[in-house]
Amino acid sequence: MRPVELAGRGARFGEAPATTVQEIVSEVLRDVVSKLDCPICLFGHSMGATIAFELARAMVTGGFAPPLHLFVSARIAPQEPCEPLALADASDEAVTEVLHRLGGTSPELLADPGFLEFFLPVARADFGLVNGYVYQPSSPLQIPITAISGSADMTAPEPKMLSWRRETSMSFRHHVVGGEHFYIDHNPAKLLDIVGRMGASLNLSLEARLRRQG
Image (cartoon, rainbow, N blue to C red; front, side, top):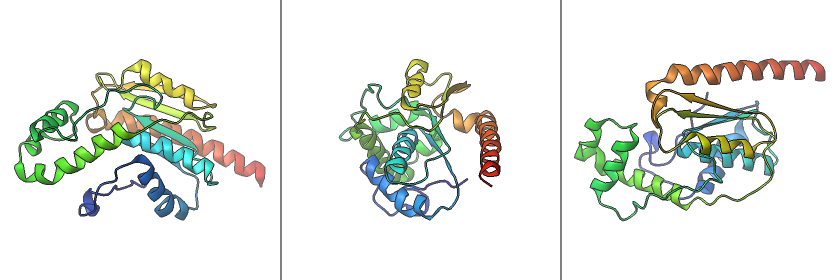
């Protein structure tokens, strides 16, 4: 597993956050994908699902080996209309309230002025990036897709998660797990089970393919 750390976070705290999905995709292609020498799967949660989807598209059109599988979590299908969160010029209180509703950040941190001083600009950039994303229709990916969502996540209702099936010409699965938008923090065992079982299946398929080629 290789997590991708975006600008403005963790060790890259001092860097300006990206402003477009394509900016992130280009960076990951250059700095991560181009240096890998093994088959990969992609997993993205929330905004990361959109990034993973566009990265899969870019890998195909850019001549890279396509991912074996695309996992998209807690994000509606890209062709579904999404109500924008107009927070670029909103007050700090309004942005903090949205973060409270989404979960994923402890109330103690959201009450800490020192934390908010550096976190709110990153959050605003993320909301702006999502709002600015424009889906471009294209041929379905020849990559299996698994969509995962929390049972109480109002931002990712089941009908709009099921629309991910239109983005693949191969197999599609949708799993609902207990929890809200950040079920990933509270129900990690279920997520790992879903991804792990699919990964085991992919390994068997890959081994069989290599044996046939050998």
